[in-house]
Image (cartoon, rainbow, N blue to C red; front, side, top):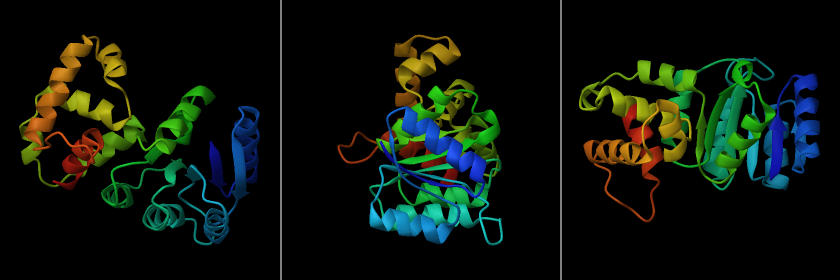
Length: 214
């Protein structure tokens, strides 16, 4: 993968760059602020950009605003938010801007480099990688619960795992059911959310977005 890193902590920024390089990936740039991030992406668009939320100058939401712009101006570039914080308002906007190539991981919960790299691969390939805590807080801020009321507890559990970017096989292992049972739950979710088969849309991601927007 070709990667750009935007992280104001020099230790974390350089550490990520070295670890990813050792793994055989190409780190095109490792920068400390948003202007440098846009400059790096414009010069050579990466497969995925790793972006912290709280960056200079105000250390509030610069990274999330930058991620939304990256999604708009460079739609072929995946964006992985890597932060200590969950900012639900902007994450919902980030997801609403498109259905593919979005990730949000919490730094304190990434225990293995293999898991982090796997999430990067999913995002770069147009998939999703959402931390369970992010999913929980996003679901909690949903204002209208009519769609959720139609889901069974098991379907909600499957949907949460879908939002993390899990395959049906991984979901089956996580909740200890057969893969065929997971397929049935996923089909029920699609039907309840009125998501017919499509050659152009990623129904798994659209199901999560539809939930968040209702």
